[in-house]
Amino acid sequence: MITDSFKYFGLMEKMEVETLMLFTEAKSQPSNKMNAFNQFLHGVECDRFDKECKNMKKDLNSLSNIYKLRVRKWCTQKSPQQIFYSMYKDIALAQLKVYILIEYSMTIQMVSGNGNFITERNTVRHNYDEITKIALSSLRNVTEKADRFLWRFDPSTHVPRVTYDEVTRLLQGYMENEVDLNTDESCRQTCNDYQNTTRSGCFEQKFCSQQPQCSGRIHNCQFIDSVLSVCQSPENSFRRYEYIDYSEGRRLGEKVYCERPTNKLESWNSFIFYKCNYCFCVCDEQGPKSDRYFNLRETLSDVKANKVVTGVRFVKENRILHLQIQQGELLPGGLIDNSTVDWEEVSNYKIDDPSVREGVDYHTLSYQRRSIDLDDVRIDDDKTLVVTGVGFQVLDGHLNLKVRFSKFDFVEGQLIDPEVNSVWLANDNIYERQKLNLDGLDMPIRSEIKSKPLSQDTQYLEFTNSDIYKDASQSTIPFIDIQDVASIPPVALSGVGIYYKGVQGYGGFVAPKIFSYDISPHLPWINN
Image (cartoon, rainbow, N blue to C red; front, side):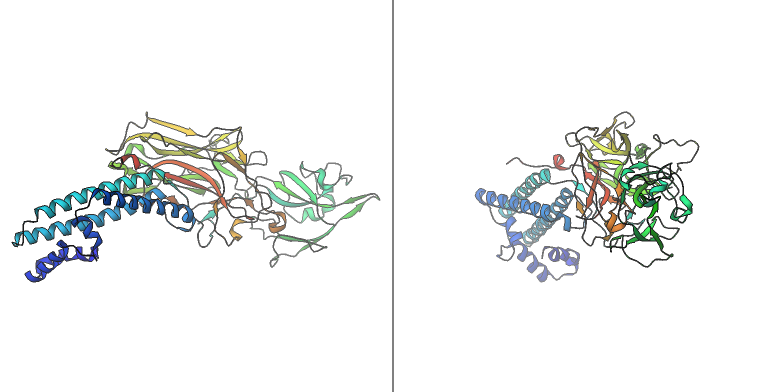
C-alpha cells in the first residue's frame, strides 16, 4: 500500500485538483486500516512506545532465532548480520516513504486553506524521530548477536572442476600379491604384516605386469579372499579399479559396466606350507595423475589501489590447489565499489619449474603429511582492521591458514599505510587439536542430502582414502568445494576460515568461509 501510494508522486502534475485533494486528505487523516500512517499521525504516549519498542525487539529477536534454526535451508550469499541490516534498510525506507507522504499531504492541505496543521506536523516529526531511534536501537541489539560468517551450500548438481575438485591418487586402493612386497619373493608372512613397504618385483609376470604398478610407498595391506575378479578402470581415469568381486559375494566398489576385460586372480601355493595371497593395500605414489599440491605463496589484495579482500575460493591451477581472493576498492562507511570487484589471478607456476621449491612455493601431501587445520582466523575486538591477504603455511606438517589484516579508516574508507600497518595472523596451536575421523566414508558427490558444517574451530582432518567396500578406496576424501564464497553485494571482511562440511556416511568437502566486517559499532543508536 505504501509503495502504491508513493507512486502517485509521479502522476501528481497531471491530476485534477479534486483528485489531489482526495489523496492528501486520505494520507493526512487517521484510519484504522492504515497502521503505518497512524504511527506518525497519532500522538503516541511513552507507555505505548515502550510496548512498541519491546514488540519490535521481540520480532527482530524472533527472526534471529528462526534464522539460526533454518540457516542451512536459506540459499543466500549474505551473512546473518547482512540479512538483518538489509531488512532494516527496507523497513526504514518504507517508514521514510510514509513520513514523506504525510508531510506532503499536510502541506497540500495547508496551502489549500484547510488548516495550519502545526500540531499534526510536529507530532509526525516527533513520532518519526522516536520510531527511527527505536528501530536503530533494536537493530543494534540484534546485529551485535548475529553471526557474520558466510559459507556455500551444496549446489543442486555436483559438477567436477566447476563446483568441486579433488586431491587425486594420494592414498589409493591397490592390489598386489605378497610375493612382490618383499625382496625375498617369499610368502612366509601375511598381508597384515605389510603396513609400510614398497613393491620389490613382479613375480613371473603375473597380475603385477597387467596393471599400473605402484612406484611409491604401500600401506595398510589386508587379506580379503583367495579368489577374485578385478575390473580395471580405463587408462585415462584417475581410478585404478572400478570394482573388485570376490568369490564369496563380497565386492569392493560399485558394480558398473567394465570397459576392459576383467582379471581373474587366485592365490597360489609356494612350496607346500605357504600360500601367496593377493593383498589389498593403499598406494602413496606421486606422479602425473596425483594432484596433491597446495600453494604456499601469499595472495594479497591490491592495497595500492585501496582494495581489500571481499571473497575467497579454492581453484586448481597446474595441479596445484590455490586459495584465490576476490578483491574490491574500499569506500567510505566500509562499503565496496562493486565496479572494481574482480578475482585476483593466482600464481601461475608448475612444481617442476627450475626456480620453484617444495616447502617454499608449495606443499606436497603424503601419508605422513596430509593434515589440514580447520580454523577461523578472524579479529572481533579491533574494528580498525580488514582482510587484505590469505595464504597457507605448514606447521608441524599441517597445512595451516594464515590471514593478513590491514588498518583502515571506516569513515573515510581508506587503508592507512598498509605496507606498514598490516599483520599476518594464524592459529598456531599444534598441541590441542582434535582430529576429525573420516574413516570408511563414500564419495561425497553420491549423497542425496546437502552437506552441513561439521567441524569446529581448532580441529583438523587428514586427507585419506574413501571406503574400501563402497568405493574400493579409489578416491581421496574429502573433496574440495571450489564454489565462490563472497557476499552479494560484496563487503569488507574481518576474517577467513577453513572448515569441513558433509553428511553422515560420506566423505564431505573442505571449503573456505568468510566473516563480514562487523557494522554494529557504527550504527547510531539510543541506550534503553
